[in-house]
Length: 119
Image 1 (spheres, rainbow, N blue to C red):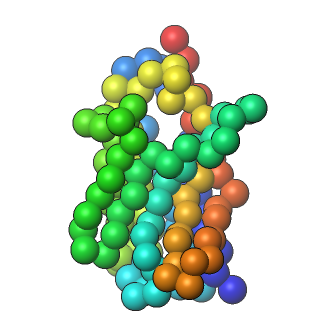
Image 2: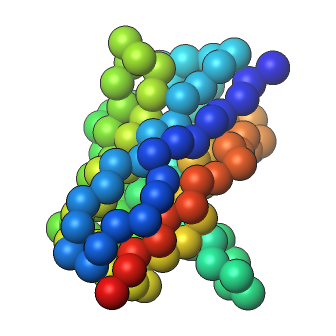
């Protein structure tokens, strides 16, 4: 059974740095059945927003609101995906969830980690 577990969330001040992690079990991020590896975020009363996406080709895409501030990466040796966040703003406050989009069209989700940016 494939599971994703996020960690690294917390409270950070405006302008600060934070890195959240997503560790996989039951699969590896190099699994060729993975279409894309993604980070979403969700706030109360809002839908999930796609923040960053990474494909095996190395192609990355970012939401306009985080371009130049967030970086998605994978460490295959640790079977972990990261989202490095910098220049954090109060509107970055959200639950951050990692996701695997499979070529079978199925999606695998983690439970999320809370990031709160304090002014």
